[in-house]
Length: 256
Image (cartoon, rainbow, N blue to C red; front, side, top):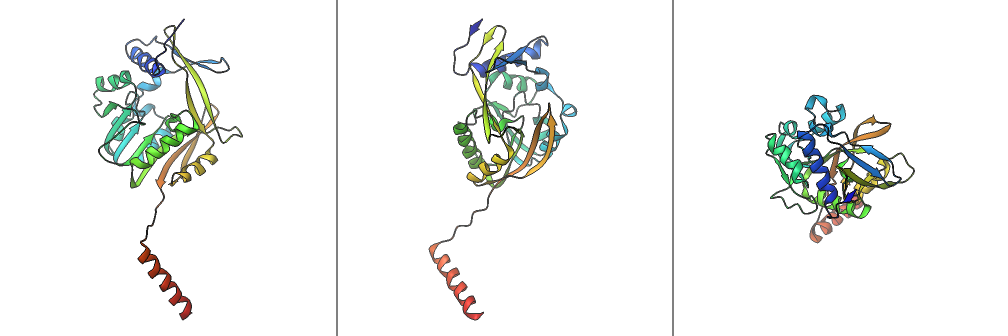
């Protein structure tokens, strides 16, 4: 068994495995957890039609509007529906996944890293489905992700996300995985999971307001649809305005 030592090896393995699956349905991709548990990824998941999506996914897509950014678009299977609600940009770090999207005529998908992404403008809607709020992997990098997302939103914009809730007593946890494909081990990577109560407080730190719109259960774990992670309205006043407001307040007190 050989190792792929490139820092992006895990991304390459995922993309290559899914691309191979698009040509050969016998392709198998596995993830090895830290406790040595091995589970097989259902690669057919990345080739679903709209009718195959869960109800919570369909609801999430219906909430998008305006200028839309889909983060972690994979093969682009959400994009045909998103296009009905606005103008879509879709990004993924894997060239192989974007190749599949383009081969299927989904031209809105392109290779980009959200941590380095520099769009020409801000967005009305940012979607992170498939638990993609956890793509930072660690608490530090997740904080960086939220800062970036907040900056990419228009003042009245919203983030639409689906997360897998952790029922553990911890506020959050970071899980480590080692991908295995065709006898090759990729680089270990981490995924971040939120406790829903902690996520609400976490959003507030970045001046974002969280609203839970729906929930479901998948393989025994709760999934939440976060349909309104929006910027908190901020009022700014000049010193002169504040003085005037204070004087008006004093006048009102004197009158009453």
